[in-house]
Image 1 (cartoon, rainbow, N blue to C red):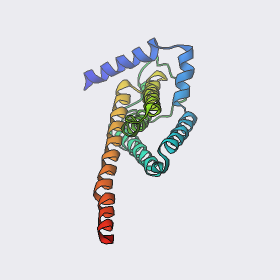
Image 2: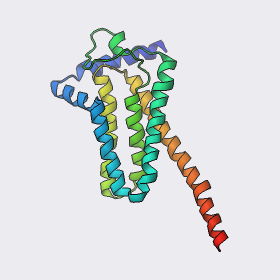
Image 3: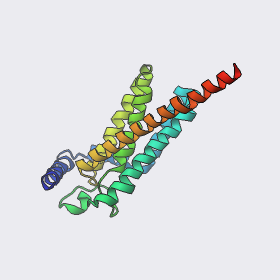
Image 4: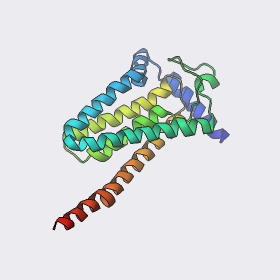
Amino acid sequence: MEALGQADAWLFQLLNHNLAHPALDDLMLFLTSPKHSAHIFALLVLFIAVRKGKEALYLIPLFLLAVGLADFTASGIMKPLFHRIRPCFALEGVRLLVDQSRSWSFASSHAANSTAIASLFWLFFWRGEAVDKSFTAVVILHAAMVSFSRIYIGVHYPGDVLGGMVIGLASAAFVYTASAWIVKNVVHRRAMLNGEARG
């Protein structure tokens, strides 16, 4: 575990310092800001509503559930469990671009939440038309950039981000699988029983 921690710290310092550029500073701060997240989520909801119509009433709550599960797992379970100190407080010479509070580092909730959204977009839209595939690719790229921004601005190790991405993938998979089971075994079965009763 100590060797992994040292490798994680080395990779963090490499990414946090060697890729530094004033133009990237502005972009990464924009990607990681809460106001940006709210605007992006509003855009995603609008896209789902336009492309899926009435089905959006079913899909949007699934996205909210996946994000809620990912956020709770990363911030409510993993951070209190591992008590990992953020690199900006544990290492010297970190390029810290934000005013960071004293909270735990593993796992990144930004990475978990954005990956959960990107995963569900891939599951529900990737097999659609060209506009659906293109938008999904943009959402996946955005999730990757948000995740990387947490390293760039100095508040998370790469391992924190990777852990958050795994949590996001698992949360999306769980919500998708659970919803598919409910639709198949409850909704469809009830519809069949109602149809038989009428017949």
